[in-house]
Length: 259
Image (tube, rainbow, N blue to C red; front, top):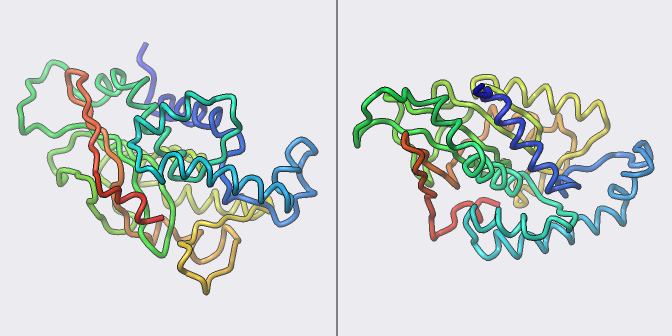
């Protein structure tokens, strides 16, 4: 029996979380003493320093070396015994390639009419890592179905805030959100509200916005990120009706320039 799109995306998030066991260095707590003993140490002053150092090592070995998403995926899988600390971009890149590697054939059956004759000009299914542009700083995965009414996507393509291709789906392993793209802003704001109630802090403001020191999930650059942030495609995989895939690479590594 064919699984649903939600089940596919949940599987990707589960796998990503199993690799990034400490999730992200840029999520914290106002009072780490409220946490269970087994996780409290990760979020204290010393734990925050260690998490940032661990992230810097992974960053230097992957994004710092401008590896593509396949190379990053393989790098992380070779060292699963290490407790990885990521950020939204690394989590999204891992989820992107996992979806391609494990679920490309299911995507074919879900999004292509297998009995149809596809031509060179037929629209194609793409898996994309989308990053928000300055002053916002967040990345997520979008599943963009074949659609004749949409502009053909390409690396570096920029789009207005909170506008998505028709029938697209979002997989956000950092915020633990899976939903139709049309509902993403609403789901994001609900998540930020829940995180604020739980005492979490987030740092998803671009580093050059020094005037903003609000780490609240309800702060200006966190709560309105999806509503207000312009978007850019920084990684993309095309899945063809016959199962062939193409990993689109950009030697200028636009994704590193937006961090």
